[in-house]
Length: 415
Image (spheres, rainbow, N blue to C red):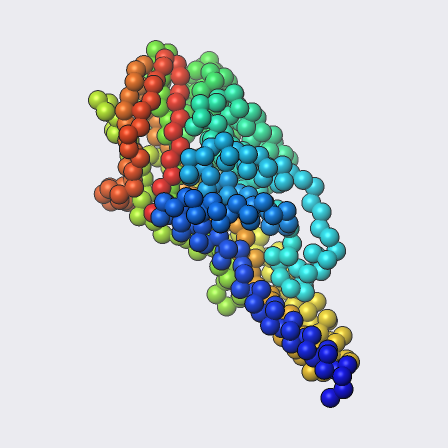
């Protein structure tokens, strides 16, 4: 065996093993320990894992920023959470630039070589999470800024003819709640109506449309909604300016996780993540008890989005298989053994793109409780689908309610 051939063989064999090792370092593997730490309540460890990943300026930075910002919110660090979300928002809006090497790498190696851009519903979610943090901090003005940003993205996506499951009805619904909190009732009605057009199944939407139409003094529209939802009985407290309202935004469980599809390791599939806690219940000392109601099913939106993308993903992987064959054949023409090893090594590295905003919840729900002005103590507890306590809770909470004011609490269950 000549020296030149030995060197080339050594290089290809080395490539074979190095790529085999790198194939194990998927996105899901890198963040799994952080998610597990959050479930255990070890927020510090989760943040320690995610922070350096989010700080690294590469094609994966956006996805790690989203996970890191969400983990900061879960830990109660709303200010730093928003700093990370603002950075993610700017990054998601940049004009995409793919280098020739990254595009070629995505064909010869795997789709994770391509810059992560995020799905449409994820990009709108960024502003919803910013708004939730501002609401939790009592900063309604900055939450209104995010409501306007949500509207801007909504208008752009509508012009681009995005499908309803991509439009993220929760973000539009949340913007309506924010407008209502600022007493901008006409803007609130418009946003509720747009949320209804995206998803008519939102559990509170009939009440919201009736209430906001009346508050906006759209009398004819109010009557139309009353006719459309004859079973809804108006609550006088909706229009009582002497009362305030406590609003709980409840994020339940974990969204589905990406895994290689059965029978096709080059393509991803989404697998639902089970959870015990399905709904939240609020208990107000010397006040009412109420349960959360579904506003947005993140799991369904994510699965539908991936399903809609599958033809394009399959086409890209088919092109990748062809590119690998061409590259290996060029080597094989000079040396059959090296060509065969090259083909094996290149295919060994191919894998499904498992990147996603994996710290999103399964669903987002809401509790709205009208209250007279005063100081209140309350607690939140998680319940199973059968109504039994699951052990997840938020105790010792206190809030001051003022006339005409809405106070917000953001809570996440993880088990």
